[in-house]
Image 1: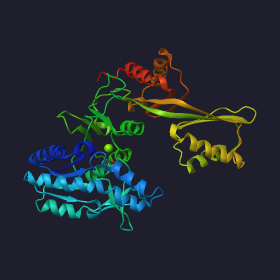
Image 2: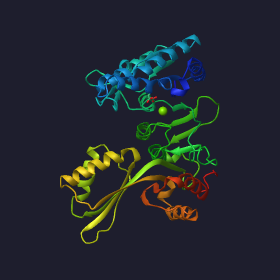
Image 3: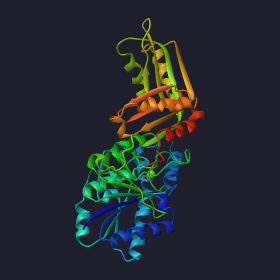
Image 4: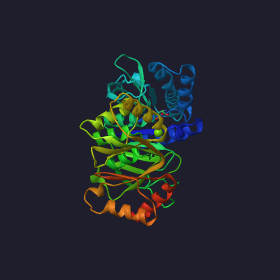
Length: 408
Ligand code: ASP
Ligand code: MG
């Protein structure tokens, strides 16, 4: 039998009615001849509640017990989904992560899947079971403790099962009906993409299009799992995340992503010497600051300016790390300047690899709107700029228009 993985996110299993609605979709695929692995999230809001209870009980919690508590939301939905399918006459059985088992590293709260042993499931499918309902987000550490895969980790569970089971496709049912050229709340001309390449989705996912956990896209790309994002509430075609060979449109730019709450930090007049970048970014890394863009200026008189961006809520952490390094004599700068009113806007597209003038077109579109660019970085398939946050919407709309993303 061909196999399919169907993943339902929290809003798609938020109550019994929605679980029934999801189960109906599963039953239809069974009817169509598939053996199905259904991966479920916890009911929406449940994981947040569990995390809250852990923090309230023990602010400096033991990560192993955090996982024991926080993984439990998925157990409930897995069992309820199996029961619902059974009541529809579908032969279904549920599995928690440890029962499969889904083997992971022991990094509690952010474990990575190392291996999925599918022998149990294969035997059940061979026995005539039609649906294996899997509690997403969970795994088993080498020490035989329950682990979780990080927030949003059920996406990764789903992709990993699709790879391990050799599924034809991995369908991610969610509360949006696909991947858009940009956030429809920001630009009403945003258009749903029929297809998008893994690389592009990775850039969009990490740039703040929060539909898929980044790790799940990395896995899909590595194992060439065809991923479809679609609505569990409406019968609409979704977006297929696939290999670039399978793309049909060839727009140079596929999407405009943004990150609203960024900060720009500049170290002025840093003594320029070999090892200075390591001396600055070492302490930031140790402090757990997520540094994104980095720009070093030409130096004058043995001094240079170093600028980087990070999330606004990490500015205090970053400042403390740099001031400590300065006090310890590890670095030497004249002034630390933090601009907490910036946002990042990026254009993404694999077509950028082979087209010249894309960045220039971006800069021109922003200039025409009078939007000043504060920092620029580029990679093979992406160009990002920092702009004042108050211009974010304007910048996104201007770029969407300039690259005519409303047209297929
Ligand atoms: N329930 C987990 C979370 O809310 C995992 C998931 O839904 O993907 O992060
Ligand atoms: Mg999610």
